[in-house]
Image 1 (cartoon, rainbow, N blue to C red):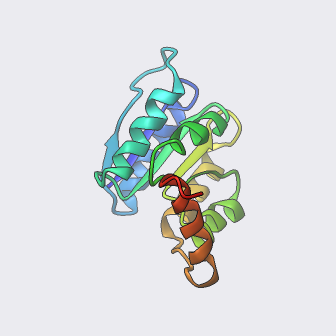
Image 2: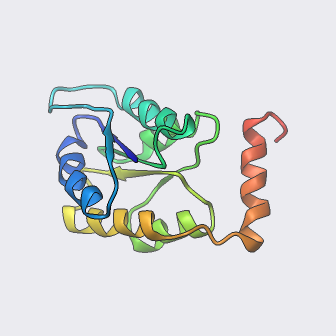
Length: 147
């Protein structure tokens, strides 16, 4: 299960990405928004993040205008490692090095073709472990107040 969410700026791209997720074999948990009316991105970023943190979704994808605010909001949820990705390298790195579990995208900044490639890379790249694992552990310790 992949949780998806968007604000009004990201709504068209979110809708474009849902068939790709099905093509990749993932069920979709769409937490909204469900139209182009203005809404507040933190509400949907937190809904995506909570779905992942609570185990209702394996990964999350959140799209707002630039992707920055959604990453900030999602990262406030314990257990979430959200990454704003803008190309294939950042998407693969977010997964391989940082074990990111939520992807944020800037729906007004990247086109559908690039977004499709980023999502595919994010969902198919495995965490590398090894030398990266202790670093991710340090990030996780920040959630527990030991940082």
